[in-house]
Image (tube, rainbow over all chains, first blue to last red; front, side, top):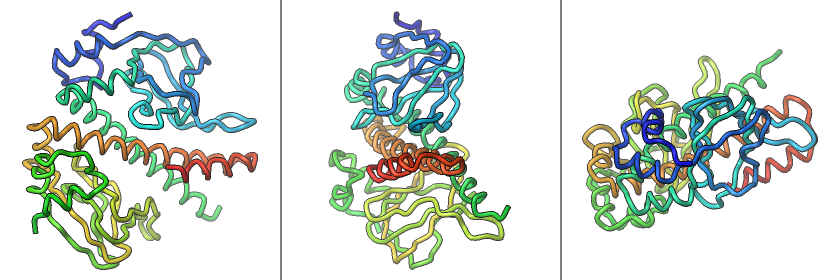
Amino acid sequence: MKINTAILESQPFLRGMSGRQIELLAEESMSAEFKVGEQILYQGGPANRFYIILEGRVELESPVAGRDGVHVQTLVAGDVLGWSWLFPPYSWHFDARAVTPVKAIFFYGTRLRELCEENHDFGYELMKRVSEIVIKRLQATRRELAAHETNLLLPI
Amino acid sequence: MQIDPSILQAQPFLKGMTRRQLELLAKDSMQTEFGAGRRILNEGGRADRFYLILEGRVELELPVPDGEAIHIETLGAGDVFGWSWLFAPYHCHFDARAATPTKAIFFYGSHLHLRDLCEENHDLGYELMKRISKIVVKRLQATRRELAACKSKDNPSPARFVQQSAIEVEQF
C-alpha cells in the first residue's frame, strides 16, 4: 500500500523536500507493521530497505553467539532505520527488533538509488539528510566509545 | 595556492566527478602543510574547513581535562576529515593533530563556499554528499562494532565473539 503524501510530508526526515520530490517518494513507498519481538533486520542479511518509523520502538543490536545481543541504539517514531542499502556490499551490519508493536514506512533501496542517479535534485536532498543524521550518530558514538574507554582506565 | 584540477582528479574521494565539478571544487581549494605535532582542528572551534590528506598522518582525538587525549581515529593519505561545517552548530567535535609532517588540500566549507556551491548546483551537491555519506556510514558501522565489542568485554563473553568481531572490523 502506497503512503499518503501528507504522511510523508510530516516526517522530520523529509521536511523541506519539494512537493514533486515527496510525490516521487510516495510512488515508491510501502507500509509495514511488526509485532513485539519481531526481527526487522538480520546482521549479514541482504540490505534493500530503508525504514521511517511511524509508531513504536525498535532496538538495534549487535548479535553475540550464545547470549543476548549488545545494545547499539533505540529508535522511535520519526527515526530512520537502515543505511546498508546505500553502498556495496548491501548487507545489514546489525540486527533490528521491534520491542513494541511498530508501524513503519519503507522504500526499496535499489529504487531509491536509481531515483537519486536519475534526478540529482532529489539525490542531493536525500543524501544531504542521510549525511546529517549519520554524522551526528557517528559523533555521538565516538564520544560514547571514548567515554567507555576512559572509564575502563579509571581506577575503581 | 589554488589546486590544479588534475590533482583533485587523482584523489580517490573525488573519483568519478566531472571535469566541470572538479574545476568548481578547485576554485575553493587551497594546499596547506602542517609540521609534526601541529593542531589542525580544535574541539569546540568553528568548523569551516574540509580536508583531504595528500601526505602524512593525522590523529583525531577527544581532549580530556587534565588528562591525555583519547584517540579516536588515525587518518592517512587519501582520507578526508572535517564534516562539522555541513550542519549547525558548525563546531568541531574533535581535535585533529598532525602526527607526522602533513600535506593536505582544504576547501572552505562555510557560507558562500562549499555549502552554497552544493545548494546552487545539485549535480555537484549530490556527488559530494553521496561520497560523504558513504565514508561516514562505514565509519559509523566500524565505530558501533568497536563499541559493541567494548561493552561485550565488560561482561565476560565467549572468546570466539571477540575474535570474530576483530576480523570484521578489519574488513572495513
